[in-house]
Image (cartoon, rainbow, N blue to C red; front, side, top):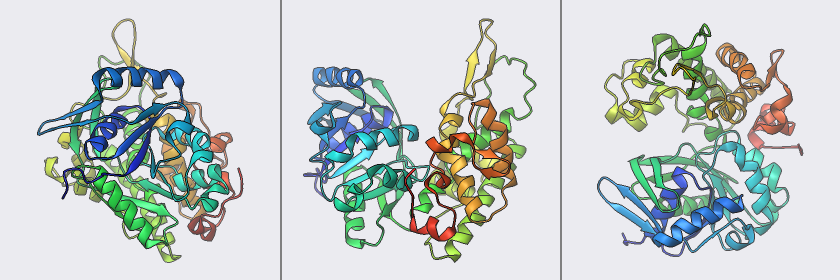
Length: 406
């Protein structure tokens, strides 16, 4: 393979977090023409100043280093969107809608627009936001099941560390019927990434229902804090390594309820064959660094990739800590995660006692409301990815992705 396998691919990265730094350095080193889009002018200026001074973005990895120089960095979509073959959102899910609104009119015909990871029914949100442009500009929407990297930026705008790489990531697309376009997109994403192979498989609902953050963050949070007595702790508990049999059962319960939903969708014609239960997925991705594979709780507790990560807390003046329920583990992974899963399950007629238990515990803690009187009908679905937001009420509509304007 050429040393620069992404030569000629024009890609615009939306975002400036840890993973955006990796993408800027890695994609550029592989020959792509990389641009970065920021919603806020100050962030764009800050990133650009550091990047210009360093001459580009350096990504340091144990075995090697990547270096790429973006061709443009801007808060003006007209500067960085019109030439993009791929517009890649690497931002928290709550930012997807605003970014899509900002870039919509500048997308070129035939562009691919996607999010990695892409939770929360990204296709429905994008269709609702892009409107007629989706069809008139022949846009391909895509979504990845998970981020391919464990990473952090060290110096904003110019240096980051790549800690780990997933060797494979599945994507789903819409429209899914154009096999050649989807094959080309998977090949382009593979060319942009080093050591990660992308495959386009199955219905978009596979990504929506994938048991990653939407299950893991609320589920483990519930396991740790569901019986908290309100007293401050001496230190933050380990988030994954303390995974108990109780928490494992919660995670299995959530996964089982999604699996039942997947069966209904499969029976009604959606290709859900790529979907995996939570334990199978974790062993597939992290199997080499898991010591005890006997149960879900042990898979989490003995996963070396999760070692040392602690639960989000607030440190008080006396040094003691209390849980912080206003972090993305709930504020993002409910509206664009667990509430969406519950909404899909409801349409499929699946009983969801575990989802209900976790949602009803979590909602008031972060001031959100989705599940009310046994249905996804709370006031905050209007800013979520729940299919109910888009007027979807039947399995057939869900599979077709038919939306009414929200």
